[in-house]
Structure formats: C-alpha cells, structure tokens
Amino acid sequence: MLPQLEEALAQTPSVEFVAVVNNLGTLSDAGFPDGRLVSWDELLSGDPDPVIEPTAANDVLLLAYTSGTTGKPKGAVHTHAGFVAKVASEVAYGFDITPGRTFCWITDMGWIMGPLSIVGTHAAGAALVLFEGSPDTPDLDRLWRLAERHRVTMLGVSPTLVRTIRTTAGAAVTGVDLSSVHVIGSTGEPWDADSYDWLAGEVFGGRVPIINFSGGTEVGGSFLAPYPVEPIRSCSLGGPSLGMDVDVVDAEARSVRGQVGELVCRQPWPAMTRGIWGDRERYIDAYWSTFPGLWRHGDHALVDTDGQWFVLGRSDDVMNVAGKRLAPAEVEAVMLTHPAVAEAAAVGVPDPKKGETVWAFWVPRADGDDSGDDVSAALRSMVAAELGKPFAPAVVHRVAQLPKTRSAKIMRRAVRAAALGEDPGDLSGAENPEAVDDIRTVVAGA
Image (cartoon, rainbow, N blue to C red; front, side, top):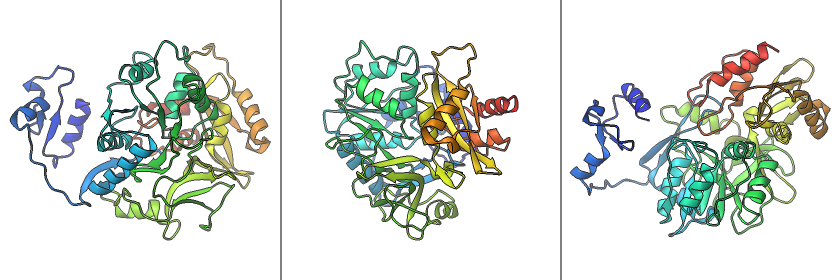
C-alpha cells in the first residue's frame, strides 16, 4: 500500500507522522524519503513504552469512510468511548468471542469491519488473525486453509466471496479441518438463499450459525443481528441488536410489518457517528431529512409475520415498476439460482408505460462454458415465473464484470449510469472502475 500512501501524503500536508511496517523486507532507509515516514522497527527501538495520552469520551477516535455505493464516500466521525462500547459488546455477544478464541474477518482494512475487528477482538481479550493479499490468491481454498491453520473460531465473510467460491470449480470443501469454527459472520449485502444454505449446510454441516450482521460505517456496528443462542431462518438478520431501537416504517413514518419499508432508528446509540467530516449539511440531509426525529439509514427492510428481519438492499436502488416497489435483491436472487450465473445486478431505468422497468446484468461462472452461450433469455423467463411477468427484465445482458466497492458491494448506481450512458459520478470507492466501460460497450453493441 506504500505507493497509494505516498500519493495520498502528497495531497495532505497536515499529516505529521506515519509508521510503516517493512513487511516485505524490501525497504531501506532510502525507502523513506518523506520525513513523516518512520519504520516500525525504528519506532519501537527508540520508545518501546510510549506515553498514553488521556482522551475524553467524545474525542475523535477515527474517520471511517463509507464504501461509496450511493455516491462519494462519506467520512463518518467515531469517538473513543462510543465506538469501543458498541463493538466490544457486539463481538462478545454477537460472535461469541472470549479469551482463548480467535477472530478473523475477511475484509479490507479501510472498511469499518477492519476497525471493528481490531477494537472488538482486543476488547474481548481474544486473538485476531490478519492476512495480506486477496482471499482468492493463490486459489479459493486459501480461506479454508487459513481457518484450519490458525484454528479460527469466528470466521467473517461476505456473500460475494461465498458466491465466488461456490460458483468456481472445486467449490466442494474437502481435505481441511474446519472443526474450530463455531460462528460465521457475514455483512455487506443481502444473501441469496442458495449461497447461504450452501455455506451453512454443505460446508459446515448445519452446526455453525451464520450471524448475518447489518449496520454501517456510520452506525459503528450493527442495527440488526441474530445471536448464536437463537434459531435463525435462512438469510434472516434475526432482530434488533443490543440496545438498538430500530423499526421499519412506511412513507408516513408509521411502523409496518409484513411489508417492505424504510429501516430507521428511533433513538441514539453509543457508536452513532458524530457527523460527516467537514460536511455537516450532508450528514443532516443523508440521515435526518426524510423523517423528523428518526435516523433513516437508506435500506429497505422487511419484518415478516414471525418477527424475522430481512434487509433487501439500499432504498436508493429500489425500483418502482408500474406503481409497485421491487428490490434489486429480489430479481438478483432468482438469477443467481441459475448454474451459469456467478453474479447479478438489477437496476431500474425510465419507462414511458411502467415508470421504471428492470434491466439486469449477469456475470458467468468462472468454471462455466466460455463458448459464448448466453442464458439471458432463460434468466428473463425465470424472473417472470418467480416474481410475475410485470417484473421480468426488459433487458438482460451478459457482462464480464460488475463494478464493486473495495468491500465487495455492487455499485448499482454505476451500473445504472453505464446502462443509460450517463456519468456514473464519483468512483473513488470502486475496486474495478473499468467495469463501467465494459457495461457501456455491451449495451451499445446490443
């Protein structure tokens, strides 16, 4: 990450000090041309017992940036007492972490799950496993070997990573001992049932609960999460996290059950962001302008008749087809059941008759037939049969990749912009911004 760091430092003269770990063994003194960069070894040899500065409860601890799925990443301000109190309780009670256990979450450290892993695990007195590189290098079995080698007790993944493993040749997990794992963590996006059930049933034999954890960078943890001691329905988020007064409401802010609504929080909580760094107006507009006195998180959610909670995706992404709301996850979940499909994205585009119509894009499995066979027509029929003909995609395209954030979330706003030939806006949070041009090319050639 040093080249990216040096590029950032050139734009931020206010930074006074950076400690760099020479983990690759390739740096010499000449590798630190900027006086602000100090090697970790030098730092320890000069002052092995640094003075710990006292801090107030509301002093700024860190700036955590959102992933950029809905626009330019926002710098959420977190404080010392609030963030620690929230993540310590969640790692201990939500993921059953205690002294003697080992926590490992497959995450980009720039995402909120990185600080959560570090602070929460150490607050609980447990061991934390970090790794470098990508979980698919040198192959997708790295994830299982990592868990086996370090006797990981809580393994955190994303639905995208699990889908990738499942739809790749050699997805059957054999020859590794995963008996140490007794909790699976998951966050980042909605699950599809097939991938969830494959992980829970085929990989872990139904013995390991999947703690489907939903909150956000600005939350400093979760709004919703089940607990290992309770029954969990497939893909469910269980219910409200400890101390969280969350609800699902309609457009008039009335609490609703059995129908899709907006996810809100009715009271503050310890780790609630103190604002967006340098942009108070954006903070007020993003979270407080829709429902007076309620935090609107920007997710569509559902509480079913049994009291199980489900998040269906970003409310900004929800489509309005002939007066009926349709979440992208509903369309994508159907498409992902086809054996040729590795990933899928559905977006709404303007339509003179329906108001909006569905356009869908899919990425073929890595182990699939690369002869060019296109199952787009079959996917359209599957969605029509499952959700109803009015919701069948008007357009279905096979593409090589979908634009994602570095935390593996699909950037549907960028997909939609590419489909319409519009400016996708800020892509600084994208892992693969070139995917936008790939989609444009496919649409233009159709």
